[in-house]
Image 1: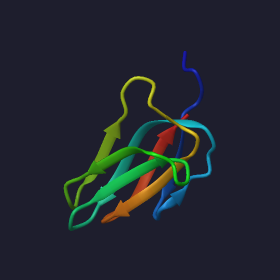
Image 2: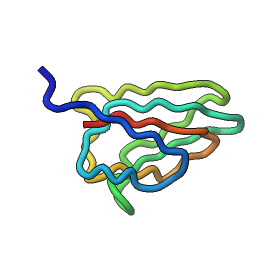
Image 3: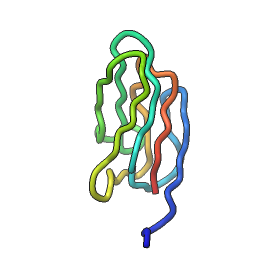
Length: 90
């Protein structure tokens, strides 16, 4: 039995997802050309908890192992050459 329901939120720009305390479970995104990069911090101005580079012009799915990454709020700090990102969390 799951601890709690998994939710998702899609964003197309940097900023807070405004979901409160959460565990990041998975990320899906679509990249464009150039050097795609995604960073997520622990709330606004918090420490970087995820910093990933991707191949260009493809769809990516990143599974977070174990219990996920615990944050006070999900803040997308860098969204370079990425059309949109969907974050799955609980």
